[in-house]
Each structure stands twice: as structure tokens, then as C-alpha cells.
Length: 181
Image (cartoon, rainbow, N blue to C red; front, side):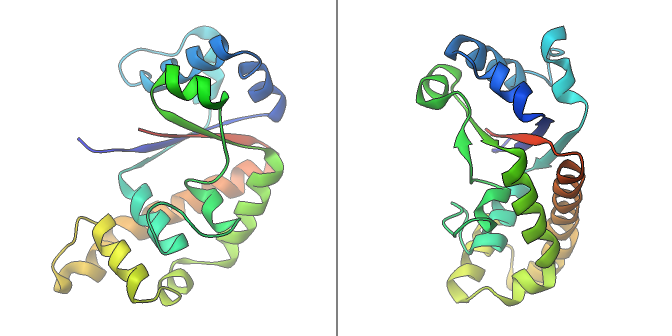
């Protein structure tokens, strides 16, 4: 099945309400994790109003943005995938069992600007040999003759969706939750 990534938008105030105590944060994380099987409870349904599913492309996008799948590049490049603060803190991570990362509306605007200024071709041209190796691994190491076709088929469209999503969020001054699990 693999590890996937999903993004949800809310205002800074709404995220602060959901993160006000560990119990509420854990309930939110568990509900988000199960949203495919069970609809979110009514008090969390607004999180599905603008939702992005990056499937398993998040790791390749992270490698494209940062040169490695762990996202170890300075802000704002890392903010698109792995960067941000743990939603609910360490206690929520332990109890919720999955990483949910929070970006403030201001951070979303920074990342949106970076993504607009760094389209697919610029990011790919900026990778060194180690970065290209990370990108290949994040794509499940396709044969060399299929590598660029796989980038065009799988990574480029998801990067475009991610860029559009951040632009939309920034334009609406929304914060973001990113769930990787």
C-alpha cells in the first residue's frame, strides 16, 4: 500500500482550536487518518472542504524540492512536504500514531511563493547526482530509460497540483495540516 500524504486547509484560529488540548488534537489526527473509511465527525467536516491527496508522490516531490526525501533543505523548500511543526506536539504524535504537520497561514504564503518561483524544470536542473539518486529511489528506482517518463507521468502533475493548492491556500490566507502516513 505505501505511505501517502494528504493536506487539509483551515484558518490559523481553527487549527488553534483543534490543537487547544492533546485530547482534541489526537481526536483530530485519528479522524483524519480514518476519513477514507468513515466520514469525519460533523465538528471536523470542514477540514474536507479543500483537500489534496498526493498519494505516494510526496516522497519524490520532497526529493525534487530538497535533494532528499527527508526534506533536509532550508525553509521554505522543505515546508512543502516535511517542514512545519508537529500538530498537537509530541504527545499527540505518540497517541495519534501518525505525523500531522501544521503550517501557519504565513508559512503557507512563503512556501507558495517558493513553489511558484521554482517550477519542475528549475528544481530538476538544480539537483546534483546525490539528489537525482534520491529522486530515483523515491520513484521506486525505475530503469534509467524510464526515469524521465516516470517523472513526467507521476511527479510533474502532482507537483503542479501541490503548487496550485498552496497558491489557493495562500490566496485565502489559510493554514494547513499535512498528514504523512
